[in-house]
Amino acid sequence: MNTVEIIAQTASIFGMACNVLSFQQKTQKRVIACQLAGASLFAVSYLLLGAYVGALLNFVAIIRAIVYMYKEKFRSEHILWLIGFTFVYLLSYLLTFTLFGKDFTLLNAVVEFLPIIGMFATTVSFRLKDAASVRKLGLIYSVPSWFTYNVFNFSIGGLICEVFCCCSIIIGMIRLDRKKK
Image (tube, rainbow, N blue to C red):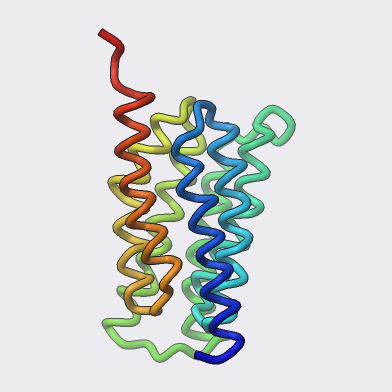
């Protein structure tokens, strides 16, 4: 492993720690704040690994996190935010095959679309009112999508992140979301 790969994997491991901790937060704002830090580190990691759609989507995730952390100021409940972010996700997908020159094969088309699914699910969860929604949509859509993407892009930190995030989501659901008896 060369120096760039070591830096990329290190950034992804620190990003993983931020994302895993996010699911243990009691408020949605704190969940989003932890994910903002994680997205920043993963953006750097994916960029260094040449996984451009992952890098682009994490740069967008930084902006998205800021918008949803300050819901009142940015009026993030407006549907145009969801439409705008979805448009940018799809644009990132197209840029992967045009600007960044990734070969358009059936496998690449599917693999590069997986993080779009994860990003869309997270964006929808940020629009909802509680941290439980973030955990639920993360478990169903985001974790499996990003896990598969990380397998194909050999992001060690990304793979470990999704395994730990899955465990953290389940623990958070048990600890924070289930009804008290």
